Image (cartoon, rainbow, N blue to C red; front, top):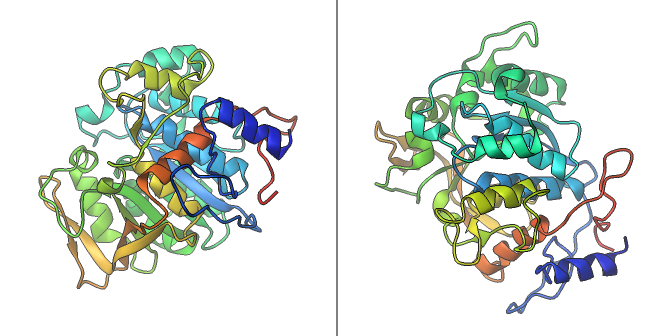
Length: 367
């Protein structure tokens, strides 16, 4: 399918400005995004998500899939860091829908996440609709899968992007040398991870609001910030960035075939706005992971550390030289509406697979 027909279809789907990085027309914007050449080598990414109680996570995976189809990232793993038995099958259903292949899947096998973090009233129905009979206990331990993925990757090549809890990464940090790799968790991360990106904190530099994602697993999040190696950037993405960016699948998408639309419809009464959209918290982190130098974001603080008290309150300590930083939006032409339209564009596409599993209706970058 050529570029002109592709954009025409997206316009009919309600995404007339498919903001995937090409020079398309932007309603209400004076500046258009500049066309950039594709990366010579896609960024290797491990996705972490709880995939439990909120429909935004399916939208996150749709955006990640779109970035993968454009050749900007390569999703090598999807790690579920909640304990819900249906979470990982539902996340896998989204990647299946977008024809993302070559992914290793890992399931958290611990019990540190609070009960609320595993609450998901609609996931069993979604699992039954898209991956009947699949459950989390059929998958390998998330810690084992992540250690294997890191071992198999070139040095300094992996970004880990987490929109859920710290349950898995804390276990990886604390892991000992094993048959997969002779290095302990800290040394393996220092060798293989180029950046860890975590959508988990409130407004920085300080907030007295107890953040839900941290509150579900305070001890593991404290362990993460206290033990993360200084040599590897740890980028925190405040939830406040996404509270003003709304996104979602097209209103006309078919929930019988589209798992993202299925879960959005299921939460229509308790999570969506009047336009059927949900907060795009973690989609901003995914965009930063794929396009760190595009000018969308800047750092509000560098070379410090996020501190977390026993209630889950977060604060920024800028004098610790711990190599952590937090993200903020650059502003200007990159408005909240801009970001929302960008993410909507990813979710408006229904890719058609080729025999090798790649998509045929995603236009070549820059053409």
